[in-house]
Image (cartoon, rainbow, N blue to C red; front, side, top):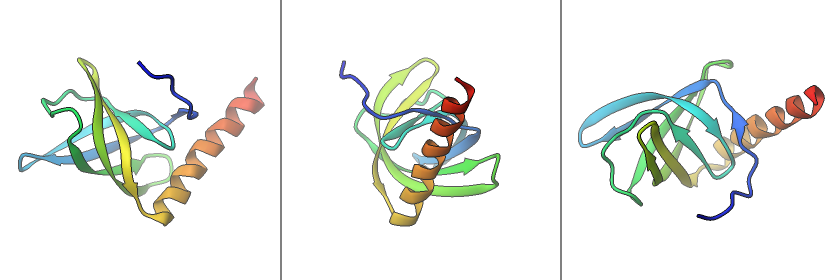
Length: 107
């Protein structure tokens, strides 16, 4: 298993994915600049790329990514972000940076 090199931010939100003609919603456990963990198990093949819409509960905002399945556990699915537009990338960077600042202030 490879080592993660990106900061993982706690995240209060949900995501929706479309798979096989169905919509699935689940909580997001955390996010990084490279991916996130979808807290619901689905029988989705590894390396499959899906369109994902992520909802930030605290701010009432959303952003969209194309992400591929890189890890599956009974508790959910790990996604790696493959494609994100520039505006959403800046938004995601701010989420991760703000969480990092909060963590530094608490410690």
